Image 1: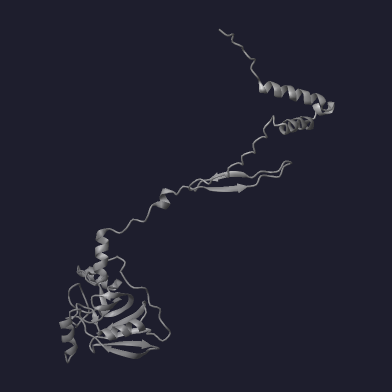
Image 2 (image 1 turned 60 degrees about the horizontal axis):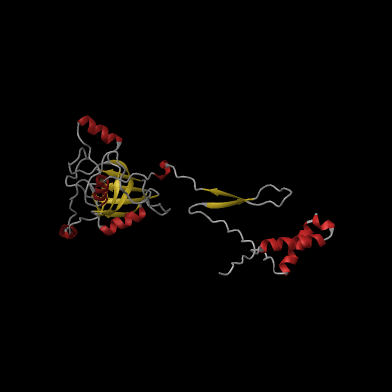
Length: 284
């Protein structure tokens, strides 16, 4: 049997270290204490292929912006070393519960009532705000006052104390005497205000008369009755057959429940001439 020959293991690291010590020995004595000497030794080893160059440094990753957060860069106070900007994460301020709580929507009953009220199918509720169109701005040529003469069945627009337009009107089914209570079919008498309007009335268009006044309410309270309300200037009857019949009549017919009715084209003119807040006098 042949004898096994064991060769000594080679240690490349040991050889490299010995070469490094040899080079350090030939470098001037000052180089052993200076960083330049060590740097020169490494450059020689790199040229001999005994050392690999150091890998290039990996650039730092750019800072990421977190979702729903903003990064604010605020420079620090100047110092001897170059100042680095500091990064501060600012989270959006939480919304308070009071601010996020939406206004409660109207109930189904309120929405149904407003819809019927807007179409002129329901009377108003005492103390409730009426559903009305935006106030019409009065021009300097508009009416300053409206006068209704019940006995003549006439409505007059006044400016400067003089009537400049007149229209035929129809009154409540019981035209004589002032209105006393709800359902008596009488048209009020007295001084009131045209205070709001409804562009989608069941009777084409309507302008509200501020009956009952404080005096009307006191009188009704003494009598123990409901004074009524929802007295309007409005257009013609919503029923086409009734509308044609009333238009063809030779004499003006009183057919309302206490309101003052006009032809549709006439209520259009009054709508343009009369602003909300205009006084109206209803005479016997």
